[in-house]
Image 1 (cartoon, rainbow, N blue to C red):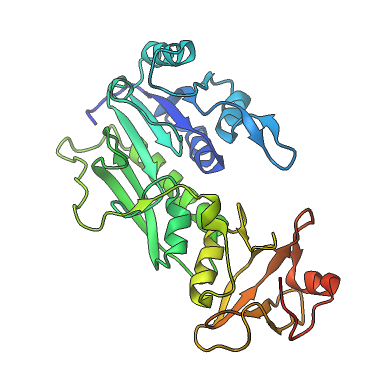
Image 2 (image 1 turned 45 degrees about the vertical axis):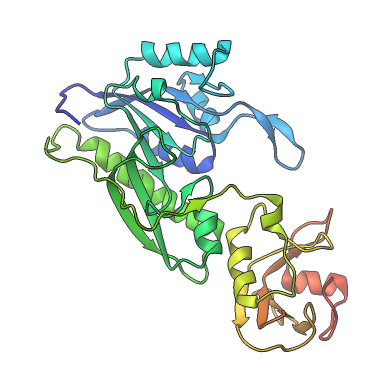
Length: 328
């Protein structure tokens, strides 16, 4: 970015809690004041939660609380009135940059070109690995040992733009989608603030670097089929997949049973018929151990259809399970 003594005029586009954490970091008091958030784009109000009541997105709620104008078009392409109104608002705001974090809508070329310095995207993976909608979940489900965050200059491709900065984190055996989400959102928000705060001092020769052509993979949106589990599989694979879906939308078995808190107990061997309870938890901290087609899987919480989520010990007591029972 070119040197500019005036505060940056920033727009923000995002939808879920992950994005709201980045917007919150941008709204923290600054001294000296390096930017102002002029407007926010977010997805429209939708049914959310157990009651499926219509709710604002986490980003829209945060912007409302700070008195920032919010635009919620269904899409940014086309000639719908709400689309044109959002585009006019972007032009009128005279933005220096639009920051995009987990927005969920395609940003077309005519919108990318509105801000003076274009659009920055904060993506939760080490690009070019896991371009797309669900990078946190897919990294866990694939058994990756590391992931990270990238600050990218957006182009018209799907997460294909050149990268300004990237930071790496290790994935532990205890991580699930929630814990990795929290670590990456904190790291990404810190990186974004540091990048924007340094825009006055940035060396003009400093430019974003093109992504490598090797190592490209795509993080497809999580579908119902991704959630379906079967104890016939391998315990190691099931543990990875369940962790990637924990706590929501959660892995689900054919009976409708949901489960999480997965641990790999043993990767090898056929200990009993798949789905057999091998060891009951002796405390609230211990998992229920179940035989798989190969190996043993530990489950930390379970939930029957229509029931509430229980730790493994509570669930086993309520279900009357014993060693040798089939968990169906």
